[in-house]
Length: 280
Image 1 (cartoon, rainbow, N blue to C red):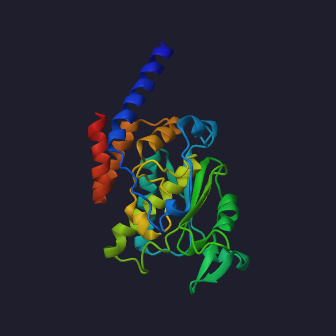
Image 2: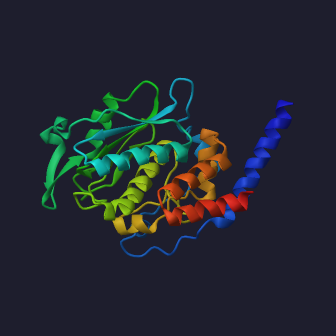
Image 3: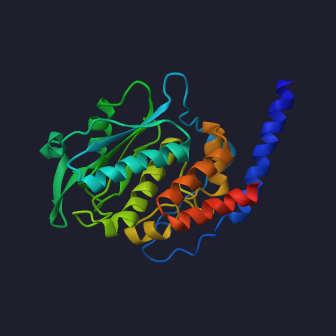
């Protein structure tokens, strides 16, 4: 009986991924300045992905945590809460927000002045501040900070930075909107935060950059490239993530559809609804 049930479940999943593959959007030829123009990357097969033994929720580690660091306005706090809701739908894993910390806890050695403003060292935040405060039940934890980030002296900035094996990441909202955040900027800024957060957490669950389709896991070099990207995982990346997290694919689509509809994120709503229709 268990063998039969497994066969039916696996077959249904295969049918689902085959169906939604028809909605995958081909990547356009990279232009100068795009991520893939200057980065030559290899796409992992499903088998290769599974051999990396990505982080998997269990009885001990089963929650995603967000750690706000810095001073946020009321509208920015609203974005963080919406990000929590979105990630819970996207990964189908309970997601919580930790108590915020002041960015003054970051020492001078992890700060620099670049492009006429102060930046914080992403690796220090990720591996020290966030790592120390990671709860025992956290499968992954991501810091969200309002200041600009840099990953090393060679880079001008980074939107986010994740560690595959440690389950730690940090992302910045600094470049997502002009401060103070206004209602007019809110929706576009929110979409940038949703994409960056789910992209970095996708890395923590073992997903590498996607080079097969227009996908959330595409690398981006700029805000313009981020805005051209979509929040949808391509069929291949969905299959990899599902092989680790074991969620109900159709429930995930329905939950995301409700979120996009409620928050008036029209382009992503259309993409998700197209997957729902084609997978039925």
